[in-house]
Length: 590
Ligand code: SAT
Ligand code: MN
Image (cartoon, rainbow, N blue to C red; front, side, top):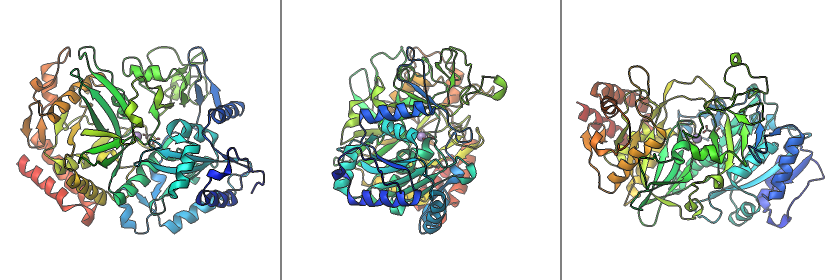
């Protein structure tokens, strides 16, 4: 191990468990230097300068995009790799059929071989971070060790990174240990391993997104969901948004959708011009940690401090806030470039690409100019609608939980669960057409319970049980809904305009929560009639609305049967109460 270990802050805040762990990792990986991150602006600037010198970051046009940069990942390293992501629990059943499993001993042995000497010639960065407001009892800390400066700057934008986190770890003792190396970016030597019983993550061979920024999916969902079950809370793949009605009442909604289904757009929604007086505040765009509060309600914090959002499709019409937000202080990954050195992506609707995401002269024959999973990383504070409550240690009370998927048929625009337990079935039944956020074929329908399929760190059977238990504990549980913005007509055209107009659906949901809106009871749950929705100023054909709000019993009988089959996969771990909910649904469907 290198003797010249650079230290950038007083050693007194390094607790023994952190120091010991870093030393043991350095012995294994043999870095040339060790850099303890303090999270200061000076450190950020110097890392950015280093990455520009090495060519890993390109400065974008400073007049049009001040302080914005472009990173290009290896062409084989552009998304999460679910087939190489493992949950290593002592008992295989604890990981469940929803995870790839390896024994902890095998997992560690495999990773030890990969990590051995892997940081020779590189710098080992120690990245202490806090998921959630630094002074919140609901927050949890971690330390990521990485040999990628790109990962460090992403973590600086995405988490509360630096000295205050290290100090909290010193006080608390326990922290999530995340070890990451980009390795040789060889897809055959790439693994993302989770050891929930040890609160540890080991990731090798990828520098991209959820594979490498270990605070995000690895810690805040897979490890945290496991931790949350033991401690009596929920770690969920949900945005958190505050909605202020024209009457001045604010409610918070948590909503779960599979990756790349428009969560960031919903979290940053812009009310349509025909709904004056509404205000929308973003608390979080991807992950929510939900805790039963002292008043019997469910409270949410966003463990993250920044956004790692999908770029393609962002334009002033689809998401003006995001479009404005990413014009400064933003790190782009895998977008294209114009002749002016501006970033470019499909769906931008202005400018022309000349260089594609791989740095080649743009040629339509090579596919899209920007990678479909190209991303922006930006501090949440840059969002013009950033909710100050995002920094509140007690979180925000949740009035409604919304589940959704990308489905061309079956699921109506919106329906309301009859009660919490039925809502757990609604969440467990989420299915969606796959997107570019993970490697694999896009457009295939797959079950994605609570949008947690790739992210639950333990057996889904146990997870649903835990959801049922949380509901039983809540005196005032949020109501639960399912939405589908993606329903299509016979000509494959979207029936619902989506984007800002989704507020019309949320408006009905909030009115339901306040006992101010009507609904029609159907076998699958409660649906609005067209007259119950605020449609002022919306140009939509009555037949389209009718289709959007229709429930086809034949289709739903098939859906329920398929759900039963899916629950079979979890055997004895499937809660009886969930089976009972499917049976009750089948009975209502006749
Ligand atoms: O790559 S990430 O997991 O961070 C993004 C996503 O899939 O939502
Ligand atoms: Mn996500």
